Image (cartoon, rainbow, N blue to C red):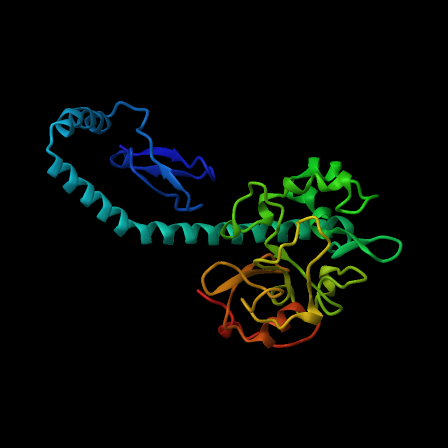
Length: 302
């Protein structure tokens, strides 16, 4: 008899047949290993499984050493055969969660624009023009992190003694699971492209209605890997230094996903750009009013 199992990691509820009670495997959504518990009900099938488990104890204790070695060999072979399946499921789960992170960030940016009349600036600067605060801090309330936002002191730099203690309160949405875990992490996986022709100019802000290339043809946020940027740090990708090569190395859009990385456009849609995407096409996605054609058929991966 099927019963509802809730993943302890991501909270996804799934209907599971009780024949899988006691089995372990990757969650279909987050990819982390879970063990399906026995159903709370006393269905005949559940009781049968429990009786079988109870009866098996004396039988196992009575087997020969040869039998144990044979059993261990079979178990070892099963683990080896299942390893690629578990790895694939984990990779798929990370990809889904990364995509969802970018969707949340895009929704927060859109909500900020609705309230303030423009997207947030790439950074807030001090009186001398030195960057002090990141757009990632500005949208905290729209990601459900009001408490962290209220503790942040905008009168001091992001790395001041008052603010730096907040760096380990990074929202989960700022880290791709393929990049690591949230434990003691303060480095984000998601940056914007800063440039005069992008949605995040270095000395101003952009309204969504200024994106004449179309919201679906203009990138807001890109995925990166290995950039070592604290989520509070007012630092992103400089359009003047980009080669616009997916997985082209440090300082370029990229990820630890196989063969490409995610970006999210201003309409809130997440795209997976293949690492063979033509740089001119990637560059065209970052401009808000260039009028360049976007060769989607050569850019998006599976």
